[in-house]
Image 1 (tube, rainbow, N blue to C red):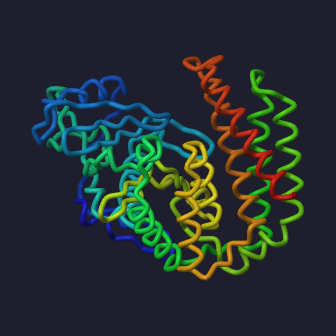
Image 2: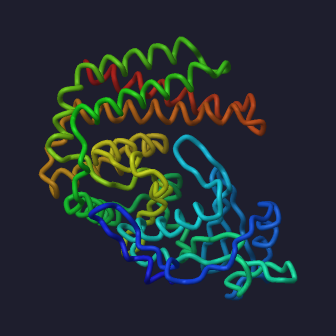
Length: 362
């Protein structure tokens, strides 16, 4: 099934559905808790495994066996994604495999069915009715993840350069997204406003710091709006990764960039400098900005993009402000209400927003 998922039609951004020509048994929605319990059991996997490590995110559950990773999407719906039905989760799982094949090589294997038979017994790839779909991947070595290497202060420069070349080649060859300068700057303005709204509504976050950061970012955006619009007009906006963070980069011999934003093409339609600025901010969190500098330098050489400093600073600040909003969002969850960790992270990103913009004007 995995090989068929590569039938991608770039002209209209549709994905060939390998199951459309097959008669699909009537699907059945089961409680998420039951599916999670089943998938936590090492005995339920086709390949023998000594253990299963389960990790929960906002949008999915990840189950790590000895050699593979299985992702089960939660039946959730947000303004930017919709996994509310089994069919939508199936379509997204197939799209995830296809899109990640661009930068993750053979890491993504395909989509496995979770089925339930007439005896109400669950199984992976059984003959019963579909109960859900899991993205199956080869498990990547955790010790080669960029976030782990940054944290342990052992960043291998040669491997970083190799990864930067791989990513830059991808950007150089990627087709431009058809987006006018006016539409692009309009989208950026809405993103800033939405992130400010999320921050302003969080009581435990310093309102004065939020206000100063937002005002500085808006001022920078106003000054650079024509230059940003020109980048869109020049074809600089590409269908990129969408979530370029150290934890999504694995520095193996053949560098892997995984877990792209498959569920929302708008969020994935980015200026490469925007993505590289995001990576830069996250590397600064680990106190290793030089790693991201390598990516930016190699990108400039490979693509002949002049990387205007003012534009890059704006993207850095915008991403820091976005991360502040996302961190503040955790505080609205019952499990993290009043969490000192998430309050401190939010304030770090807000201070970073101001620091970037202030240094850019001096």
